[in-house]
Image (cartoon, rainbow, N blue to C red; front, side, top):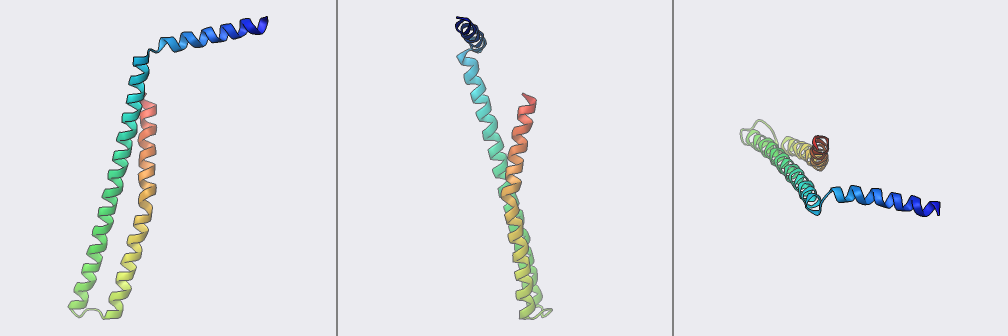
Length: 117
């Protein structure tokens, strides 16, 4: 008997808190949360694309500079290959950091939103 009364009280308390939030309020909250996730995802993607573009620009500049050195006779073929390989290595290391940077940006953006709410 006591357990039935306790269950009834617990159910009644849960129903009163659930009824305080209308379906419209719940829908607005879900839409708001979805919008925050979309914004965080888009800014993280933009950050990754911008990082890729910057890294690619640095590689193109380095390769171009090495080619000009070779054309001007300031370096031989072996030096050209070594320097281009080195620039490629740096480029690949930069590219491997991009997913982590984008993920960190996404998580930071979502954490900031949850703190503000």
